[in-house]
Image 1 (cartoon, helix red, strand yellow):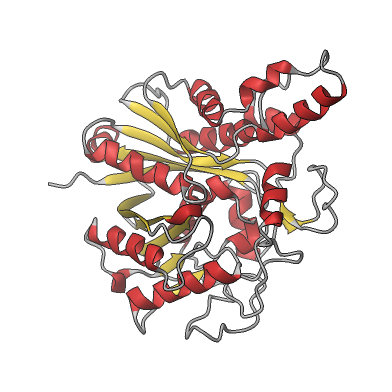
Image 2: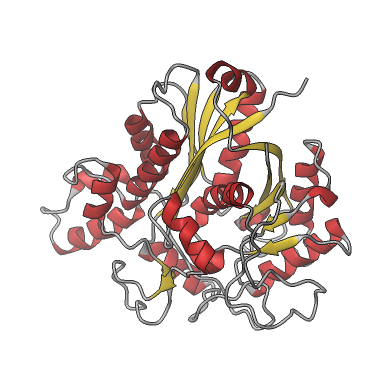
Length: 401
């Protein structure tokens, strides 16, 4: 018998809110968190909009309830806040009561601190803040989160570009399903930094206005930051504790089309394979999906590729779909975790989220995203897509319980 995987807790911080309550209120009102950067010091601050969490590192330390004097990267702080909220919402009093692990994803790790150190080091090699070098490695943020959660067993880091935290969720589910863990906290965290902003700008895929996913006139993505984590537990854990789960993870699939270093294949092969594998892994069929939280970055290539893949797999009956990145920005390694939380929100609150800034149908597609929020809709099954550079594509399916 296949072991069921239940979600018992969720946590999130993003440009549209510092916790679940704030994020839910923002998506209900159609609020966008994308605008001029106030904290990231860049020559592009007034030219390239970003999805920035509206807290400086001191304020994030206060939210995380840790000392601001410790050498913590912004990535670690965002991850600690969201992971703690997920554990709190799951009602966990003893984290080590069951075999519990942490799988955290990130693409840039402590790059924000490394950039500050580098500038200081260039000016005066005797006064460089060497203590922040330890925060550079991607795994360091995972270690910090594990320490704050008091997890002493298994923890690891995933970095597969923009599918990272979706892969963290998938790996966590597989560990539980194969008897290696009883409970896994999985998701991802990423902070804004010059490296990613300048890097994506050099690829010429950043929109200098608000991004327009799946719009004929789309012109690129908006970089964002944030963190999203979910607590997954086995059926045995649920029975022993008697707690009511928020949702069930009923499908997951990963595929790599290896088409290009950054571009998606024109025919959407990788996206199609990832979704197909997600359906094949469980008892959910394409016609059962009520809502798709699409990868939907707003780039010319991605939206066309994903749109074609959706039409391939769903035929003439593509479900309601939208891109929440139009509100949060593209949070890179954190995006799959943030989308997982939003997907569960959709189920719990009977909401289908809208895509912001959409105006014009893409000429190559026969479908377009939801433009007005749909309330009181019985959302039973949600498909969440996360597609990364190099063709690493992952799809997750969350279902009502």
